[in-house]
Image 1 (cartoon, rainbow, N blue to C red):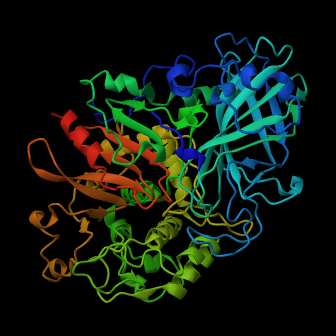
Image 2: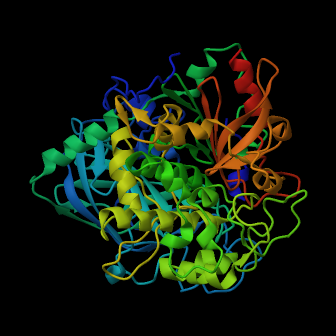
Length: 636
């Protein structure tokens, strides 16, 4: 497996999300380009004769071929529709199931329908230059773009998310200019992201082939192999008139200006004694890490995202498939925003009242029970709760069929109804981790919103307009249900979000600010504050029925010591603070080691990972003991 063969490498937020005065053009070196991606020249690795030819290369080239060098010249302005033809990618290893043929696989999920995982999809992008003709943008930045099936020979497994890039002219390319941008291969129901790069030459109405390579990835599932991919695609260029161009250029500049100030990891290391940050992100081996980052004093410090071909050159453009970390975004944001607008009684609404067709039992399940994964529904796990196994029944015999097979909201509910039984203990007392709980919560939240605002209301559109945009998250691509024409799809609340590092930092900072932006309370303060409190959190190994039966409230503090807890999409990990007092840290966690830890000193430790499948002698450790110890020492 090729990705295993390399070794990578104070002011607190106080009620407002502040953005630095660092503008996008001035911030290009730390913000848009990796400090570890040594500048070109691009023409050394991808000379113009290769760019203009159809020849398939033997493998990816150095990532520095996708950024301008020190001798780069001013590029020709660009505003055009680029149509990229479908092409077959070369892969660094063979796949056990390259085409979705419905066969069950030994590990991971299965897929059907004939989609080919080796095919880059046929797509069209509206590209434009801006920023004194140094930057490259697209009107589809941050969007999941589906394949143009009318222009496709085969069916590609992939959609793409384009991001920002650069334009320049290499001294030896005359009269051609050169463009490069970040691009992700993603999927519309598997939360995987392959981080890639695209580049081409252009002059006037002419364009070269598009050179593509995908050199990093988040955690797989339906395709359990880790792989790199590369290819060459034919393209056409259609120049567009400048109608509306100034507006989209301005919007792109404004978006980049609102990003958090990003600095290389060495800037954080310089603030502490030598070796103080050694082991950050551990105990997971660095070969399974896509990116390490930390937030301190309103600044983001990141380690280069290393690949076999050098550091990924546009780290702030990377989007990650964060799996169940999605739960820590969708659930708290939806509940806290709805509570702010309509009141915290929303937490006590019943799922069964807002999602039609569910089996008996859901009429007693509150929104907060579903958020805590304590619905008392499922039925396929163990009936033993002393001690309780919070993961019992999670990925059961019907999980893959529900996850991969049911596409629409109605189909999702039908599968849940078919496969779900009632546990004997009822809702609110036993934690059983279950994706279906959060998926149904998303449906119920959307249905409630429709009762308040009308049938055209949509829970994700509400979050995009009322939460994400105000805090500077301009794009929020997420997997959604697949519906008939005219029916708005619903976001998956259990997985499927494709954020950037900047997005996660802004969402986390909003949580730290108790949902407040300046003078505006975006999220309900009381609900948001619960993220940083263990009140109401369930001990994963405990049956809380006794406390509920005698109205004694949640388990006492002594019972919680040293125990992992769960509440509202967050895991709570035990640790001992620098006063020797045992406490818990809230953690956003995703399958295979993707995590964000919120420490009382205000720092956020972030790790995007791909640690699955793992050899028998390795594991992705949820505890993150090394990182928690480091953060605790730094707070002294």
